[in-house]
Length: 308
Image 1 (cartoon, helix red, strand yellow):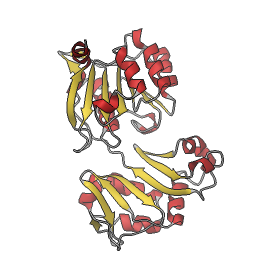
Image 2 (cartoon, helix red, strand yellow):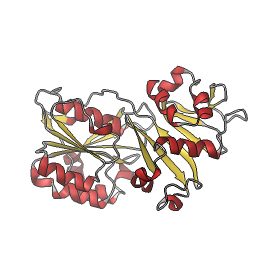
Image 3 (cartoon, helix red, strand yellow):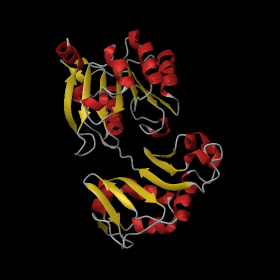
Image 4 (cartoon, rainbow, N blue to C red):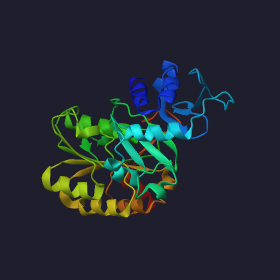
């Protein structure tokens, strides 16, 4: 609820006045706010989509009475998100998002090619999606097998809770939850796991706003980590950086987009990591449940034995 209200300050005053009247129980379940020009405002909640009526009431069907935002309201949201300093956020624009702090992020859609080199031109921005980050402490016992720390890959589609779970992993390992205080390095490329590079644990370093392939090497040289954490590994360059660090004695806890194991094995970067047995365990998140809920755990050594 508090996180929902806090992101409303980035919106046009008309949009904010409508959303602030949304019922508290729906605010608490909201994962994303979607504003699409000339279309109905809707919320992506843990139990489905909710369309917003001008008085703040929410309905689960498309209503003619739903509140529709204008192009001006969409553009105002972008301007407010970057503090009216467009060029200060040019690198984020090139990647289609603006970091809002506290784990929240505004994704920008439309003719992004037109603003790639001229971010001050917002005439081609047609929609924004505000992802609401929340600090939820989760159990992470899946990290251990017979008291031995594993390298783990979290697998799930967007909005399945991978980032939230990684945040708990970093905190639980570095604050002595499991006995030893593990030295942890978090490569936070989009400044979402620990906004501002701040983590309230004694034995963790956060490298924020740096590409994963660079951050992994930097962490190894400067931070002496026992565990490296990365969110949304997806490119062959990132996979190569992990493989280059394979014999350094460091455990990797990472996440990757995929709906199930079949989709996962169609990803080249995963196949490369799987063949080298980088991860000891795959943790699949439940697509149709609350974010961060585990659907299945697979031990990689058993999978490889079955293949053989």
